[in-house]
Length: 131
Image 1 (tube, rainbow, N blue to C red):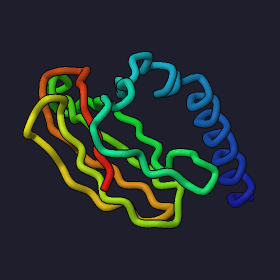
Image 2 (cartoon, helix red, strand yellow):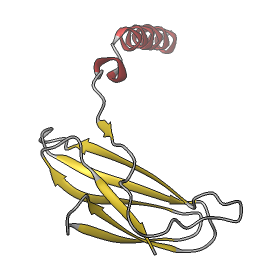
Image 3 (cartoon, rainbow, N blue to C red):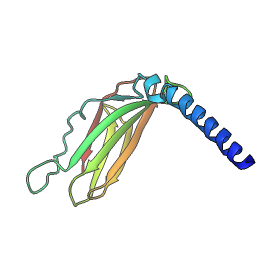
């Protein structure tokens, strides 16, 4: 008798908790502002573009500025390079017309994410050269 009463109370509590959880607004619905600011393509450099056998560029490049959690004004400038070819490619990623650069090695069919820098700017220009 005590066990069945305990089970009944437990089921009622679980049902009440489930109802409360279902009525809470989701974290996704609360956050309408994007945490990333996507950037444009890399500015052209004088290095030749490495291509595959079908004459497609081996590298796909994306860049974004991502705000810090503690201080939303500070933005990490992230450049992501994906190699769609089997050969290793060395890249040099720089802020446009700057000596502030990062070198990376992107192995075949791999992706490398690099933080180019951190500033209080949500947009940035960068160049990429392949070797």
